[in-house]
Image (cartoon, rainbow, N blue to C red; front, side, top):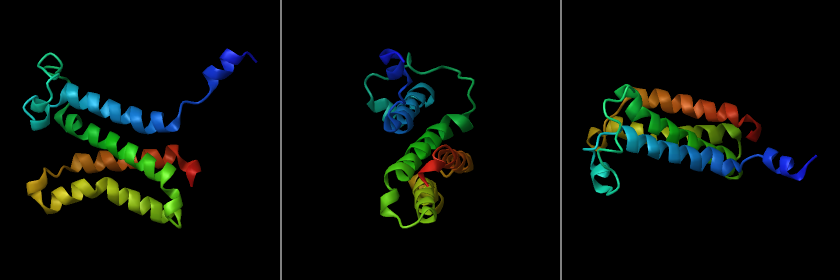
Length: 140
């Protein structure tokens, strides 16, 4: 087989594909769809009204939940792929990673001053967590 063809068939680095790329997509989603009035958005000098997609067709429930789900996917990937050696069983790994994924929402539910608890976030984060486990089931 041709060497060029072999190189093109080599898999992409899993860390880049399942951690860096999703986080970049989540950041892009944040920059394109979040309100410009949000504190972080107003602190970024390169964000302007031109970058924001006006009157976007994405429902608000997804606008604010998708970045959380992407973050949950990336975090779960890190646990499944790189933290397995710290846990004695796969079940403990799954429980700890699921707790870490949902921890921000749990804190927001207990202490509303820290943020806004959202059931959509919990649902999408749980789906994202499950998707990560399905995709990377061979790590168990």
